[in-house]
Image (cartoon, rainbow, N blue to C red; front, side, top):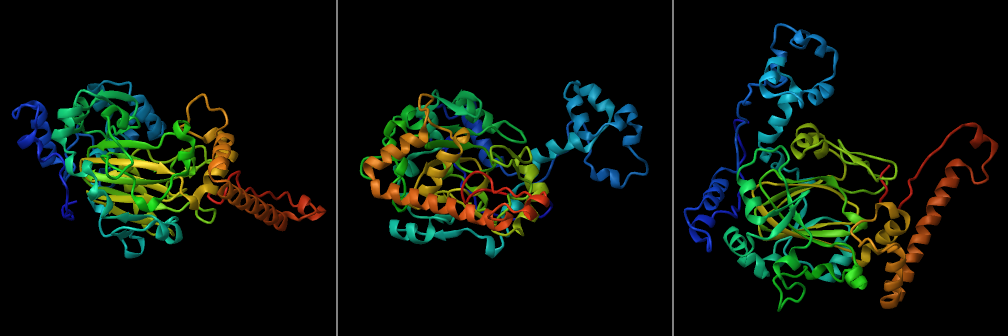
Amino acid sequence: MGCQPTIEYDTWLQDSADSCSGIPPGSETVSKLSSLTRNHTPTTVPIHPLDVKPLGNVYAAKENIKAKAGLFALLPDELIIQITELVDPTTLLQLGCTYALHKPFLCAHISLLPYATNIPPENAIARLGDLSPENFAKDWADKPFILTAPVRRWPVYEQWSASELLAKYGALLFRAEAVDWPLRTYVDYMSDNEDESPLYLFDRSFVEKMGLNVGNEHESQYWPPKCFGEDLFDVLGDQRPDRRWLIVGPERSGSTFHKDPNATSAWNAVLRGSKYWIMFPAASTYPPPPGVYVSEDQSEVTSPLSIAEWLLGFHAEARKTRGCREGICQEGEVLHVPSGWWHLVVNLSPSIAITQNFVPRAHLSNALAFLRDKPDQVSGFKSDIEDPYGLFTAKLGDKHPDLLQESLAELAKLQTGKKRKWEELVGANGGEESRSNNFSFGFGGGDEEDVP
């Protein structure tokens, strides 16, 4: 960690101390914001406050340290860490030092920058100025990419800063994972936390709360990049599922590996700060990302608890994995997440972003298949909507009947293809030989995006 790579940062909090209207220049909030700007990039891991040592010390030890733990030596570290959660700090220190105790501390302080640099050329996410809707539909709907031009035309890109947001919306409640905090409280938390996985402000109602106009380029604070075309979930009107979120977070905050809901695509626009992305396609010919384990129906995903823990354990392997894509989305840029792609994202500096999910024409069949075949995994719809698939097909049939029929025919073709593949493997007539071998093979219950 002695030689830290350099990278250009946009410090979205820098202007707070100088131009914060509505907050006294010498106030505690501005002081914390300024401190965030200066200190958000640690270069070394500090000494643990209880002097807990990392596992590496064991390799140089002359004796078996764990053997001296008495009855605790019989227990695995995972169980020991659960027991120690019930112990006060003084007693804990007397019990000895294990990697299980030191690892969360390490993950909370290690620099993440080395993982976001030296991206192999073959992994690099494409960077473009802008795209036309035709080019997107023809060549880019299935690929991640970064656009450098559209966001810079948004009024919110020009206007939003720490000072403006705090002055106008400091008292408003925003959702930060499981809690609702005033924005000012969350900013205070951002400036004074050493969490392994910092709380992430991720609010789905920000447009209504902040009174923003969205959609029309000439009258709005921001609008979706034009290249993505029509969002077909718009046919649902106010019955559509959740689609847009305000995202604010300190360095190290972010999201572990996941796919976006309801087989939607998404765009993520960075207004302040920078974000590192690592992504993998999710077709049936690709396994999940290294370190990510998925149930057969894809309803449950197991992975390391924190982003830092995954980077420490699996990043090197991931970079060598087929299909890996990586990139840094800087201030004023927007990244496209194709339907079905696994992705992990982490803030390299304190950041403000807006993200939105959508259904493009190129992935309508994916969304239809998800709503039809995985109703228990559908999310974001109001509780009174009992049949999202039926509602969507009915509304889509009213506005785009030909498009609906085309997509349903595509789904039927895929279903037939899977059935034929199954018959080739186990025998079309279920012959005696196939039954006697006790062989079974499952394709999963979804679409071409299923992960084995």
